[in-house]
Length: 487
Ligand code: AMP
Ligand code: ZN
Image (cartoon, rainbow, N blue to C red):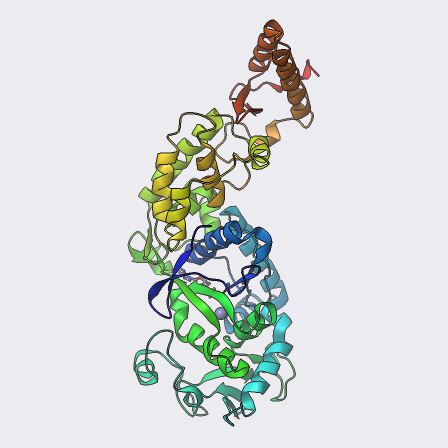
């Protein structure tokens, strides 16, 4: 096993990762608020934590990792969108949720194990708020009701509050834009529950019809799906304060634990051409804009977006530039050509996976496991891609898949022949010809083996022997009409 090391935002140190239960490694990542298309910055945490999910699955086994990423489907930004467009909230959140799933799938992000929607966990949130309002084992109440709102009482947990971001409550008050409201005892107190007007979404609660504050959903959903204390909690570093600080306060005070998660991981922000993305600067775009092509630009394949993202370490600010996009596109084309030239296809990889030859490069894995050093891992891949034989390229192909750079080996966007150009019956005919060729070789009938090789080459099928198994790929001159004659 390779030891995974991660930089814990809480201790500000790189630590060896030891799961609470190696049979069930548990990770929670704060997901999107669903009111609009995901912008390019939103794709960064999705991709970073997807790489970690893949690495954890690799180390502990795919069935031993539980990854939860939520959808915030109750929020004032969603209400504003509904008011602005006159569309029902449920329609907006359902549509935006599907957009997010489609866009993230296009950049190679696997679906997490659970994707809870906040509105399905209102009862759990209400229960947690009730616990916070009742005296804890030391007789301390951590929440209070004021003017129809329920607020978390930061002073009730002064020792714990601010530990993640390493700030004192006084510093936070000075530095943050906290909402000052007459009903707050301390300006840092944050909303757990707030009243809803007739035109706003609301649920009945002991404090009247209302809706949750933002932070409580993550505490309630992570507890329901991962337990009171779990292994890893992640998100963008803009969430560290106040969101994560508030999640910790709620969870620790309600559950009587000294922590919510063992390791806190935060990705740095993404900028575009050296500037913060903003609509007024004209450098704001969504993931979908890139995938479909926008402002006269050609479409950018999802794998290229992913490769650009992985070329910067998650703890460093990332700059999206046109130059990086071009370089990534060239790299990916070269890499995929190399694999195709050596006969790699979905079939090859599927067959390879059943053999012991399908194994990673130890150095690649070591670099990646060292705090998710994706730029280092990509540098190693440039070396691995220089292997001259199909068998020698196995660790490289393995790395491509582990990093999610090829989602479906059969339909590489950059491939000369797309899957839909291959008729349904063709693989059977080709497999039959290849089997006949192998049989001829086994019988030392070289003339027949050569004839079959020529037949395959004439229809434009490239046959390669990878790790002892023959596999095929349609070449640029693939001609289904000629193949049909051989049916
Ligand atoms: P939101 O829907 O705004 O809550 O954001 C969803 C996720 O995207 C959170 O984890 C944010 O930290 C992250 N995020 C938002 N903007 C950026 C950005 N420019 N760069 C990287 N991550 C971002
Ligand atoms: Zn959260």
